Length: 57
Image (cartoon, rainbow, N blue to C red; front, side):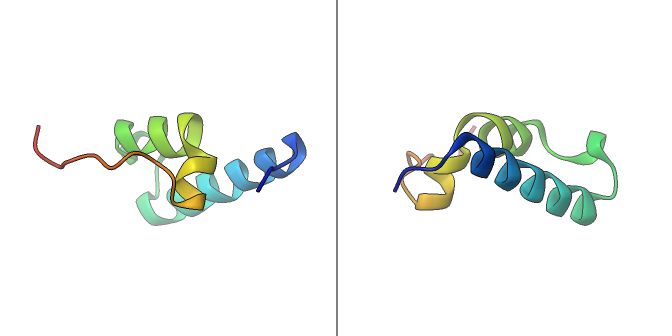
């Protein structure tokens, strides 16, 4: 499914608002969450196509 730019922006804002509600402060949101979900892989994440990553670091 393809998303329009305006739809993507609305989804990003919604996700960011939800993250802020959960973490109460933008600086408390984990960098990995912010970067991968909000900026880089949002649509892939939502559609379940994001590459699987192990939690071992």
